[in-house]
Length: 420
Image (cartoon, rainbow, N blue to C red; front, side, top):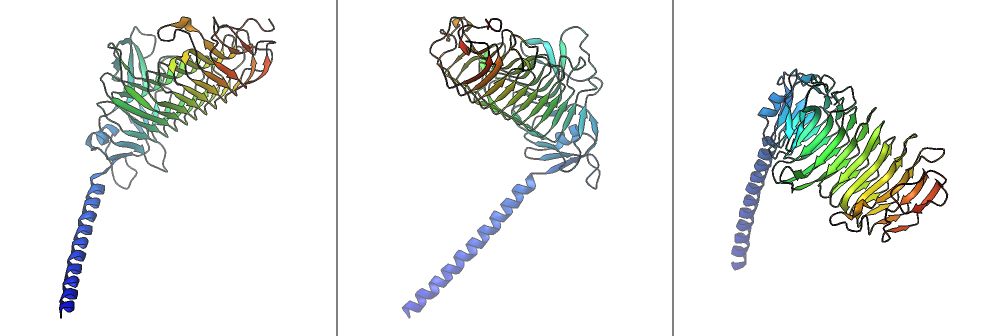
């Protein structure tokens, strides 16, 4: 009898547990369905079987954090502000929507840069961190030309101010106010208040910009406060017919990764220009036809420059594959650095460790760096070690070809004429 009561009690207890678990499962299911329902999709344009909102700005303005704004193909004449963590996207499988400028665009100063106003097609601010993808940002109808008085007005694809986010799989084209010669940018990011911002710029095509394709800084002007501006610039294809300044320009960033990009220049400038960054990694990039320094590094510690392919064009004297100006405790390794075929260009070098006069904390110039296993060919000098030469860099196991006789590794900041 006692055993039957115990068994019965156990059965009733088991049923109570089963009922409780079932109720819990229902609650979890309701919670999950409520969570997914809270992330809505807002449609802009007419391609989804019903009329959507007429403008991208209208779609963004009604979207809540976590929502997706899907934009139908077409041309949208507007500038779009974003202040929420949303996804703004073209529709997979359809043509990208194209954003162009209105007749009187809004423009914004970067503090302490009153000679320049950025005029963005997409303006991200107020600590937002959106995702922008499958959009074409076309600046060809930018109405303010560069012949006017200061400030210069820069047509800009995306401007991030005090914010982070992602730009991917998009096209940013014709962002220049001077016939593709100068004044304009693809993606720009800068802070005006303290905060931690992270950017991902990946898989984009950026062509025919004015001043730089991508510019990221982590310093607040005029106070010179440095914030934690970090992120990834990867797998972008960047092309310009008349490169006037830097392709990718970064400063005062932390843990920035620049990798897998293809850069095709066409004039005097710098492929990657990085200064005052901490723990910077530049790897697996291909930089072609930049008549200047393919990679220019200044005031850096703990930088890694590995596995890049750098191809200099002809008729570019006084150029370098990698120029390190006051760089310490860093690595330049496994890179393939090639000058133009034929006699080496005057004053050119594969790698220059510029001594910079031993300024500030860099009292010895560029020191304690490892330069190893690079392939360097077709330059006046292979590696220049500064003037006066820094002797505590580790320069070993590099391969040299078509370098001026006796100048594989030499002191100085500039190479003499070929053959001397």
